[in-house]
Length: 153
Image (cartoon, rainbow, N blue to C red):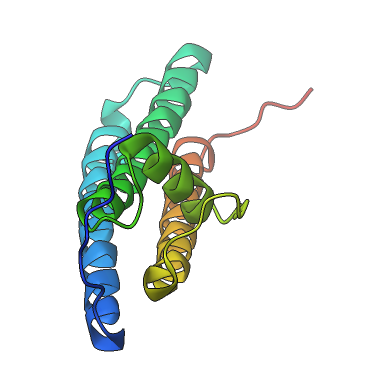
């Protein structure tokens, strides 16, 4: 386990700036992913194949892409915590970041007192990004399945 760096914590304004920067980076990463997926998966539905197999591939692909982007965003927060010396190593930081981002908050790993307000900012980031992902999947489902005619039984 690497020793923690001795980095002087910022004051309240510095914490707010750090939190804002991390939220901005995660929002950018998420937005780029959603726009890219939107162009690839939703785009012009006339060009996309339908049917059970095609629909299944789209839903699974979108879900996995969104899980991956959330893991990247958790990693961004984790690397920040290690860089600033808040947590001792990447494994601990990724664990802390994942339970914070996902709002599980186990409490077995905590940030130093002067950095703790970042945890609530990360939880807010996770809630917002999860909401965007949910909205995207909902739009995807509406686009792919909403206009289909049901055949009577």
